[in-house]
Image (cartoon, rainbow, N blue to C red; front, side, top):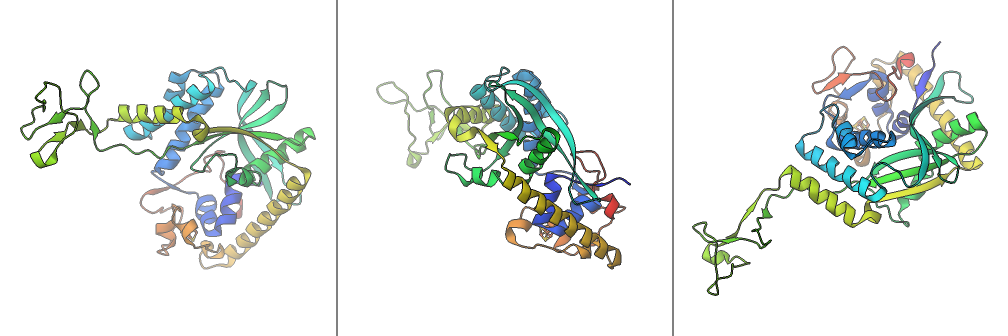
Length: 351
Ligand code: SF4
């Protein structure tokens, strides 16, 4: 009998909100139009994957646009992010690793469980220039990346990291090291109005008739007097200008937007993770047994309803309105899909 797949993201989802886990991993409900954050994150990831294969910036950007899920503003943002990344680390010749094997899938048994197995995909297995073999993982985040940020403390207990470490330990007998290659997402928004400049780089002040204001000495005015009906000439920012502004802003503060850190795993961390993971497997089996007796299967999966969870939940409209859903009739704006990370039915064995 095939085993039920547990991924780092499905385990995190089950711990966060069991009802969300049911929608996402048992029913397979997916948004027809994923959020902007998810689309940009996927595009940046695809660009990074192309880079890991040794492709140049143009090919990285083309890979990011594959699938056509980005509008022109999102594409501009991705252009700025990937461009600034290449400025920070070099376009193709990475400064930190000597070799990279990108996108490696793995399957790992779960000690104590005959029902579940761990699966995942690492962004890359790299050989560093000092000869050490590491898991290389790219991430985008909104968190602060400063040395003192709690982002790094939390990362040590990241389920994904520990699942990788468990796989590395089981296959090599060594405690692994993961290099996190993190990009902080820029929060810059397109500007409604940016000043027009003349050929000398000077701002343009227009009078009430739309004519450029010139002072008595023959030089152009640089500030507008609204009481006289004057205004600064300007235009709404274009996507090209927006992408260039993001590239410039991120390149000007590389320490703020980019960080690479090694995170090592200890035996204690691994043992604790294994216990927690087995607990999640048992919890899911309990819910599955209850679901078979429930009026509706989702009733067996409790809601963890709180603002932090529900505000960002794609299923909030369905869940909080108690709308019944089933695989044959997904609600408007949703589709039923296989588990997309690994192209496998995720929870079918428990349904
Ligand atoms: S809306 Fe809230 S309670 Fe419902 S599935 Fe999402 S996170 Fe869970």
